[in-house]
Structures are given as structure tokens and as C-alpha cells.
Image (cartoon, rainbow, N blue to C red; front, side, top):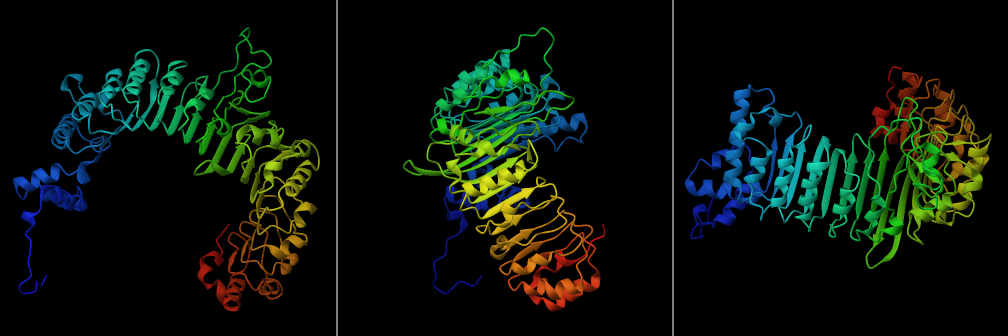
Length: 545
């Protein structure tokens, strides 16, 4: 570097330690960082005290998994010495032991998660993540009580039953951190009583995830609505319910019902999950509930909302500041073909705050009944609708339900219907002139009838159907920019199709004919006659079936 004559220069040794540490933070903890620590004592001190370098520290035992037992001990001892050296800079720590390395070490060595946590300064640490498999010790959980300034805590231990001593230790750790804003518990079994009581005292909590691997989620989770600052909630029930034993007490009508669903628990022999809903939580922006698909004839775990039983529920709300009108997107998956959607109006009324416009709706695995859609005014501003694997109780009920949905959603512009039409396009869909994107993949379609809907479409997806020829009705889609025909294994686009159909689409920019029988010479004709498709040439290459 050339310095102008007379210009003032500053040597790096004249910089204060704090600024020097910020420079070292840009370099990081790689090879050059290790070299920095060898320059001099001052640089070593500034390097190991720089929060930009050591503020977030991850100790992952996957590194010594292939080492001999003696080398593992030395590796852990080195990590303890490192923690002791940088303890004044660490604000967030993650201890990841997915292979149980720490559990196999000699307890007398003192090389465990308890001692690692003990090296940290509790007045500095605000984030702790413990991913210890199969389970951390009770002493490890109890060590969390030192960190009273915790804002984020994650405990991932699929073999840990949070009962008796471990449950009491966790409750004490949560009580010691009243300012906790984010909490993730992924364990074998949550306590049936202690968890909700301990959680309800976390008045600053904004994000909560509860994951149970081997037992049902505890009852009383609807009480989480009392957490008035909760913005993100995820509940995962990954357990397998066992069939009810003969003579076991059964729930009577109305037991376990939630949000106006009498007798829901009695229908399956297991009480459905009772989640808090955005309607009852003033700040909740995202709600995700996932249950396990039980096999071997076992009853499915379900979520009860109004008169619908669901296996998956996702709701995302965009809340306006100052309590303004919200906007919502909802995904519902029944997970079982005999589960009915019931009244969509009642379901949305139970789920969403009053007067919340619904912009996006996805229904999967639901049995649609046109009568259950009557009066659903929440769909008036719907712009995107997805139906996947939906069925009807009788012939034509899916088409009738689709016609009812289109009538309730005059602003609908994006419609996806997959694996639901059984080979025929309903006439109501062909008349939906408000649509701009239409996805009809995986419906066993052999033909696409003509209709007014085609003239306004900018994207049409006919992938994974039974088309044997290019539908002549496509000539009406003059605004079409994207056309997807992939995985129609009988389809062979011909030179006549290129001349009389594809070249009649002046706005077409993207064409996908992969996994079809289109000949290479036709692909070359497409390249030469439609140069605007040049940037999508990889999509025009034919792949072997």
C-alpha cells in the first residue's frame, strides 16, 4: 500500500483492545485466527476475549467420534480448557452430543455437560442449547438454574422423560429464568401436570416448541393462551397411541371436546389435542401442530377444532401494528380419508380472530361436503386455494364443493387441485375467469376442455396426468407465460403441435416437457422457432423414463 508523503498513520498496536477484537472477529476462528493467538500476549488476550469471535460457541462431539477412548478424553479436556479461557466472551453456547460420547466417558473424569456449563459466566450467557442423546442427566438440567438471564433455551433429548427428578429440575430452571423468550423442548415424554404450570409463569415467552416422542402431549395445553406475548407456537405429537384395552374407562360424550366439538374424543378412544388458537391469543402469528400417522390399525392422533378432526394444522397470521386488521393463511390436513372437514365456516371462526380476512387456504386429505361450505364469509378475500387428496362422500361432491368454494371466493387468482378430480375437469372450474394460475397435476386427466378460464391464465400446470396429445384448447391461452406438461408419459408433442398450438402462445416463456415421449427433433424445432425459451433449454431436454 502506498502512503502519501506527510500523511498520518496509525500502527495496529495503537488500537484499543476492543477495536482490535472487532478486527479479529472478522477473521474468525479458522486457521488465521489460531495464528493471531500466537503473535503476542496482547493479541492473544484480545483474541480470546472478543465476543465477535467467541460469543456463540458450539461444542459438537461428532468431531471425536472416530477417536480412541483416550483421545476422546483429551479432546473433551481441551474443550473444557477452551471454555475456561473464553468464558468472558461467551453469550450463547450449544452442546451437541448426538452419539452419546459424553455418556460413555468415565464419570470420574469430570468431562461432562455439567462441567462444561459450569465453566460459563451466568451473568453473560443468554442462550443455551442442549442436544444430548439419548438424555442428559438430572444434574445437567439442574445446572441450567445458574443462568438467570436466559432468553433462549433449547433441550433436545428424545430419550428423556421429563418426570420426577428431571421434570422438577427443568421446572426449577424455567423458574430461574423469568425473562425467557424462546423455549424448545424435544423429549421422550413431557410431564402431564408440571409442564403447563411451569410454562404459564414465563410471561415474556414469544416462541414455544413442544415435541413429545414417546407419549402424548400433556393435557391442558389450551391454557397456553394465557401467555399474552406468545407469537410462535409449534406442537409435535410424535407418539403412537396404543389401542384401548378391554374394560378400560372410555370417555363419555363431550369428554375432551374443544371449541364446540362434543364427543370428539369418544369417537377415537383418545382425547384429541387441545391447542390454544389464534382467536384466543392476541399476539400469536404462527401456529403449527403436527401429529403422527399411526399405523397397524391404531387410531390416529387428532387435533380437534370445531367439528373437524385434523392431523396437521398450520396457521400464519400477519398482524398489523397497533391492533389493526390481520391477514391469515391456513393449512389443514385431515390425514385420514374418513375424517370430515365439517363446517368450514365454524372451523375458521373457531381458529381465527374475528374479521380476519383469509388470503390462502390449503386443504389436504379432507372429505369435502358442499353443505359444510355454506355461509363461509371468511373466504371473500381468498386469493390462493389448494386442494390435495380431497374426496367427497358421494359422486360429484368434490365438483360441487369446488363450485361452492369458487362462488365464495370471487378474488381467487391461484388454484391448485391435485389428486382430487378423478379424470374430469368440472365445468365450474372452466368458468372461473378470475384465475391467473391453475395447477391440475396428478388428476388422471386425458383431455383439457375449452373454457373461458384459459384466456386469463398466466401459468398452467398439467403435470403427472394421462395426456396423450397436446390439448387444442390451449390456443385460447394467449396470456400464458408458463406451461408445465412434465410426467405425462404418453404425451408426444409433435411438429404440428408446435406450429398450430405452441407458436400461438405469444407470451409463453417457460415450457416443461420432461419425462414425456417428445422426440428430439421436435425439441430442436422448439429451440429454433421459439428463441424466447432459450434460457429454459434444460427444461426442454428429454429424459429417459
